[in-house]
Length: 103
Image 1 (cartoon, rainbow, N blue to C red):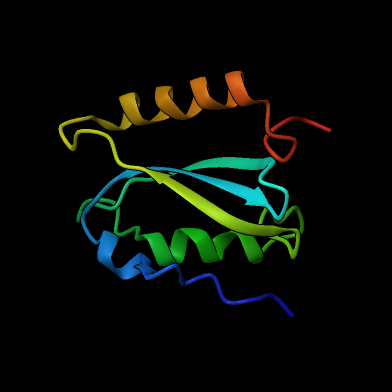
Image 2 (cartoon, rainbow, N blue to C red):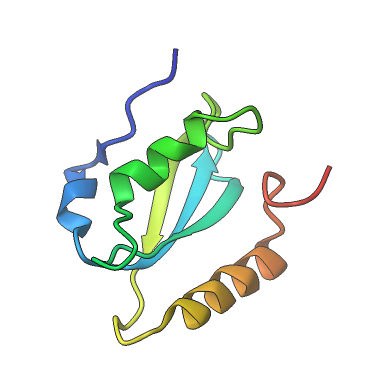
């Protein structure tokens, strides 16, 4: 059974409503495990809570018991989806998180 991933140190995912950004999952040692994006807009109907929870719901799940921390980067909100994906790609390229890399 997975642990709840709704807030940490007073941070609430619900406070991110309407904001798009990049998130980074870290393990207990602070090592980066995975980088992802959330485009929380009315057009996508996506939100942070559903995006994070989605990592528990399929066979190749990225959110496991070893993930204990999440960093969130909120860029200028005038960034478009392409810019957000480029930011995610650059972080994956630079940080090389194991759960983003092909097996």
